[in-house]
Image (cartoon, rainbow over all chains, first blue to last red; front, top):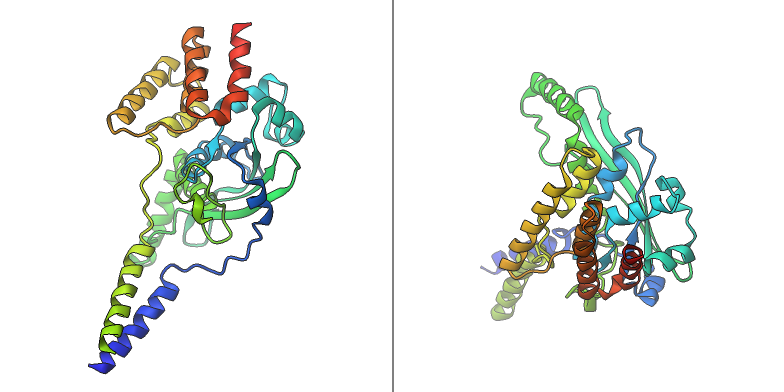
Length: 218
Length: 118
């Protein structure tokens, strides 16, 4: 009897320590807390991948995670249009816009600069996967201070890429994925996962914003 | 002694079950807002603006019926679509609503409103 308790205790302790798999948070949030942004302006991402669809595919997935964290997120399509009407036609130019100008036009507390570094199929010998990787920097619009930065990646082979079918099965999987991949929407689904992973309250991730009930726990 | 252990086990079990579950209720009713933004760029011009408006208005009714707010940017985006159709009054109304729901947007919305009224 005593032994069972002992073992169960040990098991639970281990589960507690490992189940949430939270690495130690060591990010320095001093500037973030001091700045305490309420609203975030997300610029159309820079795109270092060969797929031009990456920019707006990724941009269309950022509002939800940020808003659910408790921030006001400026309407991304309208913001894009405002930039274009002001003569800044692509993300490269938009990312160069001076902060005081952004504050003057949008009145945002902070700006999120995203770069998509990977968007599309990665071919391996017996498999191909669709992978999206992006990094982001949150900057205080008043003093240009860096509040937070992070990176995330997502792949369509994360959830149970079945090796069960043996070699032939794997080849079929790879082939099917390439066919699906060429249609194009697979990248968007993976982009959404990457974006939600990037912009969430995780260890070293973003803090909650004022509109979240979790805000007090920051 | 046994009681303490039992308590510890129970607490641990609850923590494991509850702590990691992590599916908090959403703050907003999202509807098709983000998908529409994606479609607007990936299939530019394919979905008529009237259709986009209709879908967004339907989302709004759904949000109201479940008593949840629509997300930040929703009404501003609606205003943007109305503006493209030349429906200035409805565009103004939408920008005003965005501002009322989210004072964070005041400066930007005022700028858009002023431009329409020019």
